[in-house]
Image 1 (cartoon, rainbow, N blue to C red):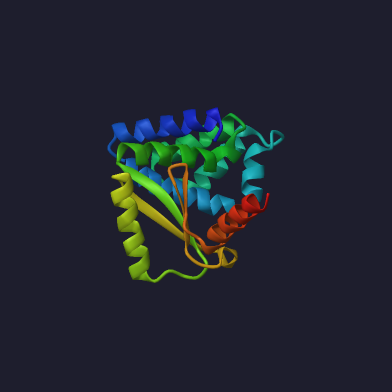
Image 2: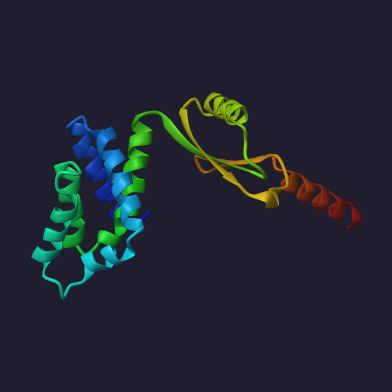
Length: 179
């Protein structure tokens, strides 16, 4: 995340918080970011300096006015004016980080070899909430290469209980013994 994204995403968060619309703005910002990621040409269009700024801003109005809160629309216009519209997703990350910090939320990603059942995911989430003391937003992902078990990333830390990791540790121990 760049300093620009931290500054601008943080400023949008502060404005939304002052208005009591942090959650609404987060939801809209995430939706807009996902939509725009699906249309990379739109991002390029917002950065084309040969297209007059008024036309680029009118395009944003046409697409988003009445569909997102005025603060978010103005924020997107500001990014376009600065030639930084492509940094919207990074601003979302910065916004979400501030939102999560203020609301005692931690994001975690669990990687397993196969799909976790709802019960397994629920138990894992409970354990992570006890470990962190925060509400967990858990993202599940499958990666057959870990062979079994679960690898969790949360708040910059890795908890690796995968079979692959255990096998690598055994291999390393054996190599140390042979030397």
